[in-house]
Length: 261
Image 1 (tube, helix red, strand yellow):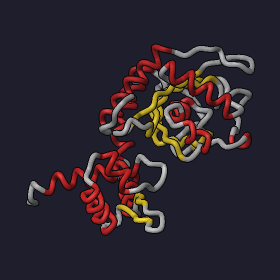
Image 2 (cartoon, helix red, strand yellow; image 1 turned 180 degrees about the horizontal axis):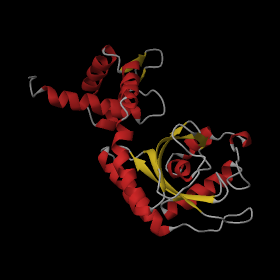
Image 3 (cartoon, one colour; image 1 turned 45 degrees about the vertical axis):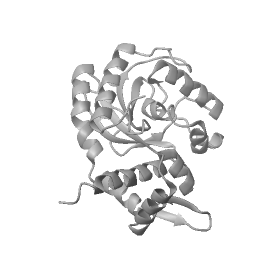
């Protein structure tokens, strides 16, 4: 068994990796030292060790450090082992039993929403959404539940122009300004609502699932039949149903060691 004195160094090394993961791009050793409250000499030593093992890359010309290929491979291994789907399965099944509607888990993939799990209710509901299906993230409630908690610059990068605002029906945000208004309203309310944006005659409510840094990493939604005529929504937000989804999202956040906002 290794010396217990190695544990603080391991924790510091992991803290450095977490600090780098929170940055939009490579950063300097001085910034990392300041953020973590570490001596510069300790920070440089940790960065050297992490660079030697491939978890960090040193951009010498820029005097900055970024995540290395080993960190990417570790993240890819996480996805290959499907832990999120395994942990979410029981949560979604319980949600379906309580809500009586189809429940789904989705993640952002660029400016699209990718569905990972779908648990069907006993009621026959033919939905366009299914495992592996991708939809423009600004349309489904699951997509906007996550977009609402991303930095404004990140959302702008995902939707840089009018061409990014694909539509499936007569409803849904048509511009970045309109999307920002919708996201702001949904942040205030606490959950996202979609009423005929994806498929006419269906509506959804969704809550985000947060990681250890309180960042949105997935979203849980339930979808129900709901007919609302015209080109505008019916302004319904289904708070009782949303509360069940909130509880499910909170449970999954806890299971993955995340931290809710």
